[in-house]
Length: 140
Image (cartoon, rainbow, N blue to C red; front, top):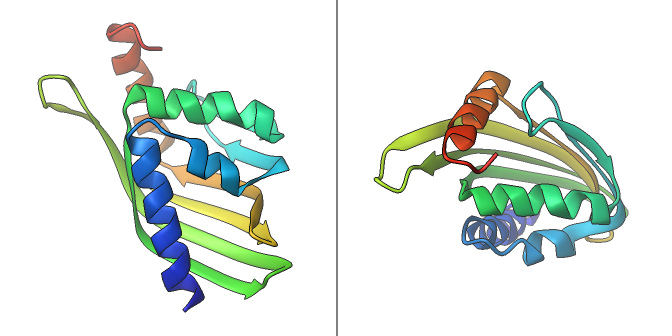
């Protein structure tokens, strides 16, 4: 039941982020959230704090990346829950050409309804290729 509810909430938040509204995602983040996105692309980062994470999330939304959760697992007690999200994301050019496509796993911890830390794992070479496209259209 927990995983089903979590998938509903995550799906809603990702739909809003895909539409450019990162507010629902930010509401889930603790003030001192820790976020990691490994790799050597311009997306790679390690951040501490909601105020530092917000520009990263806004850049993601502003780029127009569409993100979908395929599976969400939530387990544990309210004071120490583990969440795992497996899904896919993509970006289409204004002409409709698919210029980026990737799969991801997000692994994190929640306490009393707030994300305390999470890390995104995906094909970092595809993220780097996305940088190339975004640079070519002046969005990097």
